[in-house]
Length: 320
Image (cartoon, rainbow, N blue to C red; front, side, top):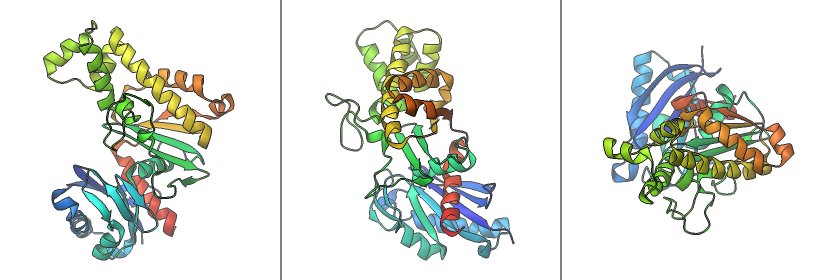
């Protein structure tokens, strides 16, 4: 009888779920809306009901399911599945692991969502099962995961790998959702890039970014990269600024964990070499030379599946 793991990636707007084989093949995947009403109290019930319905509809037996690996945004006690805080969901001091176990009668393992993405990318994506990996997700925010000597790093109370909240602008930085200012997330995220570009516009610099914003009503990170590719000086300035700060931050992290792979994912990473080239240059400039020799920059391969595949790997790690 074939065995399956359930991967669950809980986001602010949707929850991605999948049945995944022992070798990491997705057999069935689907999404449900994230109900954040009443501080997300209905989310575990929605997940349990959806998993039950999918089991029946897909013809799987419950005995084939070895457990659930769930990722949530926030600070997690991975031993108990206790969520200290997940701002986007509404959870605070929330016993996600216990509640989901009681509802599904399955083993449940909970991890930070960015850590799950790192595990997924290392198992079935561009990490290729290396022992030491640094994964960075550049989207609306900046997420990260650190795998050292084969294990994901959580730290004393679940804040290890929160790369987006490294301070990169000590004074006068933009406010961050975490309550600090000048975090990496305020610079290297898609939102941060747009903020930097709008500052260049507001300073009166000559740039076609202003025309793009007026035409579309909004400015996006994709617009900035496209303008940079067309030799817009201000757009190039923004891309280089972001790459400089991000590269320096990664170089400092790499001195701590000495990765052989640095995986860059998220929507901003779709710029590909346009981002990676200046990022590598910045990293090389700031990294310890021997650390630089070991590190290879690669783009994430799994896209939105990284979290659910990482969830499956989490179950596999615990029960074999």
